[in-house]
Structures are given as C-alpha cells and as structure tokens.
Length: 556
Image (tube, rainbow, N blue to C red; front, side):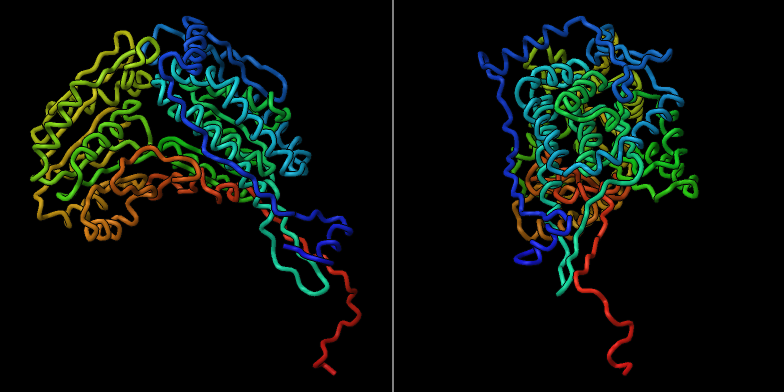
C-alpha cells in the first residue's frame, strides 16, 4: 500500500490509487420452503406459470436476437413430452460474428473501473436472491429435474455466492500492489485477457454456467457463453438478469451451439484468450488438442481451465460412526440422481461394519422416492437428464446384472416411458479393480467393495491408484491416527477432501471446488485466487527523479 507523499504523487500523476476496499459478503442463506412459507408460495406460483409452456430462446449477439434454421428443444427429464424450451444452434458464421463483436467491445469494458464491473454481479446476485429467485429455481427444477432443495442450493445460493464473492475478490485484488522505491512508484494493473474467453457450461448446475460466463467479465474480459442444451431455460434466465443489471451488449454473447461446431470456431480464432470449461474429459482433451494444433495462430497463449468430473470415494474405517456413514453416503450418491461432479460412486467398507452399513443402506433405500419433483415435494430425486444419460447408465446396470463379480443389492431397474427414470442402485463388487470402481457413470449408482478390516492400509493405496480422477473423496474414521495416515496416502487423490463428511456439498468461499489428474486443472472456483486466472497483469513503474548520468559511480 502507498502511504504519504508516494500515494499523493501517484494520484497527481494520473495513476489510480487503490485504497483498501473491504467488501463485506456472506454466504446466501438456504431457504427452507416450509409449508405456508413465502418462498414456497412464490415457487409454486412460478412452477404453475411454467406448466406446459415452451419458452423461445434465441442466440443473442450484442442486442440482436438471432434465430438460425437449426432448431432444437430442451425436454423436461421427468416428463419428456414437455418441451421446456425451443432454441437454435449458432452456426460458424454467427459464432465468428459474435467473436468480432466481443473483441471490438473489449477495450472499453476492460478500461472501466473494476468497482463498476463488480457492481453488475452484485446487482445480479441481489436480483436472484430476491425478485428472480422463484423463476430461476422453477426453471432449474423443470428443465434440469432438480428437487426444491437441490435447485435452491444451486441456482440460488451457489450462484449468488459465486457472483458476490468473486466480485468481492476482484475488487480487493486491486489492493495487491508491488513495493515502491525511493523516487518511483510501482502499480499493478489487473487487465483482462486480450481476446475473448469461451465458457462451455454443463447441465448439472445452473450456478456453474453463471460462474463460467460471469466471473471472467469481472476482470475486464468478454465471453462467448455456450450453455448446455439441457439447462437452456435456467441459463437464459441468468443471462437476462446479468443484462438487466447493467452488463453491456457484446460482453457476454449467449450462444447455444453444437459442441464440435462451437469448439472448431473458437479454437480457430486468433483472438482466443481462454477456455472456461466444465464437462467431460474427452471433450476437454479434444479442445486442448485443438488449441495445441492452432497454437501458432493465436495472438496469446490461451488459458485453459477445466473441471471434468470424478470417481469419488467414501472410505470407511472400522472406527467410523456408522449412522453418519450411511446417511452421508445416501445423500452423496443419490441426491440429484448422482449427477453431481462430486457424487460418491465408490465406497470401501470393512467387513466388520458391512452387515450394519448394508442393512441401514437398504432400509433407507426402500424409503427413497423417485418421481416428479414439481408435483411431489417429497421426491428425493428425479429422472436423469436425457436419453443419452439414460442409455449410458442402463448399459452399466445391465452389465452389473450379467457379471459374476458384481451383485445388485438394491435397485437396478429403469424406465424411460414418461421420463428418464433410473432407480437408486447399490452394487457390491468382489473385484476392487472392476471398471465400475474406476469409470465415471454419472447416475444413481453406488458400487461397494467390502475389504478385510486389517487390510485398510492396502485399501488406501487402492483408492489412490484405482481411478484416473481426483475430484472429491471422504474418509470416515474416529481414530485420529487413521485420519492422519489416510490424509498422507490420499493427498493427491482428491482436490476436495472430507473427513467424517460426505463428498458432496462444497460451498463457495468455504470449500473452493476442483480436482486434478483427469478431474481437471483445479482452479478452485469459489476461492479468492480464481479471478487471477482471468487477468493479464501489467506492472507500471513511474520514476519522478530524472536520470542525469549514464555512468555508474565505480566507473570513475
């Protein structure tokens, strides 16, 4: 920080001083939606207003709403006869037009004070917290098949937290300044990246789409947002909130598109400055390879940030609290149908505890209600997202039924006649290296390996080496020595590591999220360093004493 004359000098010579700007932000409270509550009434009204309707969603470039001939539909997962939204795919020409319009708008946006840019996200957070909350929740429930609580913790609480905390971090980053020396001052200017950022969003969290597209704008970037086909309605609602809260045209372009067409267009543009991605490993690797192949054509080295899912574990030691293990695993494995990047899909249980844990899991399993989350608020989870997901999970369940080393203990059935419904399924394996223990399924399927109690040390090594992913994981134990030992062995096995808690449920600013290995680049959205990913700093040294000699004193 500058003090005294140096601070005055910088101010007088046209450089902006950066007073400490402590921005007070707290995590958004999660509403309860109790019978008769105001939030429940508002949500029911919003849900009723969307029933049977089809929203029309264009591509948006600047202020222009564009329709192409390639028309698509978003279907409700639990009632696929309901067309939630009609939208269209941007073609290559439209994507390229959007790139040029964004790049043309970038300089003016980048030169705005960060406080002004942050104000857009602060306002958007307030609007989603208040007047638009019910709408965004309802569109997430109907379009993405979420229950009330799952929509609330995502499309309200997490999205609001992303906007508020990242805005806070962007403003406070300006206070991180280099040292000054006698006769000169040094200023760090946190510029946006020169070019555009492509935001490629997933279906499973409305909040992630808003963060992938919204947060880079804080640092002066322009963004091409490719929303997920199966989260179109909620994504468009978030985009409209950003625009209504002061985001200028061309700063975020809203571009539904075919994945390969979008990928080819962005990676062949000389202006590509970054890719902000959440999705599958093959898609992210393909984008990375495309960037590498086109490296000579870019004006900068593009930054790639990616989160790619996981094969998340619950390790249970014989000293674990059994009830906590069971209830945490049910929530982690089956909430939102196992379609969270962090969902537990492999579990390691000592033989001494397995009878208790198995019986309690099966007892709860019998009580889980799978159905329509709009008509019945007691539904625990609903249908999986679409026909592709349904077909993939079906193959895993059919394989399990036919395998000699896999035993279906509960569930295993599926029905796509009305919606893409899959039962919560618990499978026991005698082979800890079976593919079901290493490959991501992304559905309500929990695989369990029962190990000899005395072999827990070998099992820790097994957990670390079984899967290519390293996103989340949990250790359940009361023995402190085991907790310490597991932390060392599993140090690189998870980017979000839980002790006596489930592998899901990270909260912005409390557990910044992300993992390494095949799970991604671990940039920790939700943490204070995330905004640094989207800035290209410039250091400015200004000297106030003229140089009067070219010789050094020792030269005589």
